[in-house]
Image (cartoon, rainbow, N blue to C red; front, side):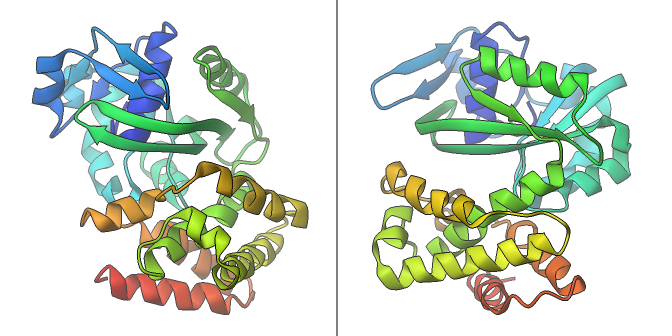
Length: 299
């Protein structure tokens, strides 16, 4: 598990509790987790603990594995050129559980397209401390293959997640699935920052803000259509119906922004915008939001 933050800790812990042999790459949290000897998932009424836990400070200590799950923020992808090679055997697959567009292509170019799988996490989980995460909504995960239909290994990985109590589905087209996730990520992650650091419940409850959310969703819908991906209106409305159930949820980009960490501006907003422009699709609200985020994050 490369990138054991909130997402990596949650999925890695669940998979390990279900019997998978999971090794976690940790950085700043390594001493604290080694001392504690466990990883924890805190739910609304439950606590799941993985003990003992296999944690390491470098990928060289881990060595070759069957599957690498990359849950780093895309802003840290430059480090993959050093992190991934020690983990790779002849048949090692790389599954990137990252936001936005571009990471699959980047990893495929560096390590070979035949290795690359992708995943989309639909989940509300935040880091609560070293080796501890708070999960308010376990949601689901969507898995696919880079540049090709689902394979036997895609189905096998989905079964592993199902066994770990994580609802999974297999997408025949990973890129289409990524555009669908952008329907939520572009408006909610972006406006949470740009409208003063507000949570998703406020974006849904305020009529003017909800109208901004819908307008951005429609721009993503139109951009996706230019690449042959049809996202129905009912999919957009389902996002508006389901999001309030998350409560006062701070999207991951807002959490990073508040903490002074790098925000994934280019993968979530910049790259979709560039692809829309290249396809001749006008996205004026996305243009404005991207510019706002660049200014707010000091890019």
